Length: 212
Image (cartoon, rainbow, N blue to C red; front, side, top):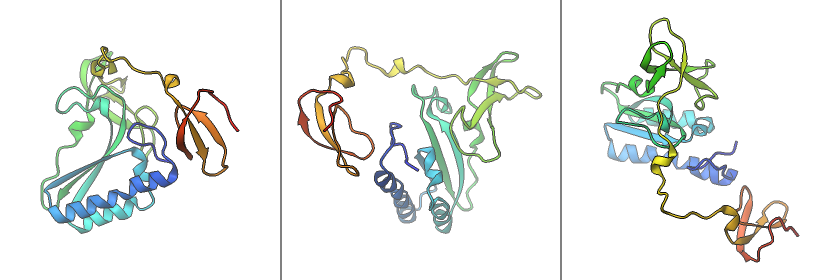
C-alpha cells in the first residue's frame, strides 16, 4: 500500500517504506532518553505497516505502555480550537511502566452542537469493530448525552484563518514545465509536477500534455 506524505500526497512505495522505517528511530530515541512519555504522530496508514506490531512490542520491551488514538487535526480541541485544516492522523501515546495512564478520552470528545441538546461534548463512534481509519469514512461523532445517538459535527475552524491573503499565489498550471521520466516504462512527459514513479530532470518549454 502506498502511504500519503505529510500533505496527503501518495508517495512511491520506496519513499513510503523509507518514511515508515524512521519509526525505528523512535525506539532508539526512547531507549536512550527514557522520557516519561512519548507521543508519535503519523498518517493512519502506518498502522498497516507490516512491522507495526513488532514496533509496538519493541516499545513495550523498553518499558512503555501505549494507547492508539485516531484524530483529525481540526478536532484537536484540548488546548484550544483545532487546527484550521483537515488532516487525519494516528497518535501513539506512550508512557513509562508504573506511571498513571494519561486521560486521553477527553481528546476524543470535541465540542459539537446537537440539534436536541445544544452544545455538548461529542463521542467518537466507530462504524466497524476494527478501530482504524479516518473521520467520516471509518468513524463519526455522536451526542454524548444519555440516550441520545444523534450524529453531530464537531466545531472546526476554516482554512481562511491561516491564509495570508496579501500573498499572491501561483497556479500549478503557471509553473515552468519540466521533463519527467517514468522509471518503469521510460516514457517522458512534460508537466509542472511529477507524481508516483516520475523523476524530474530539467526545465522544458511549455507544451502541456506533450509526450514522446
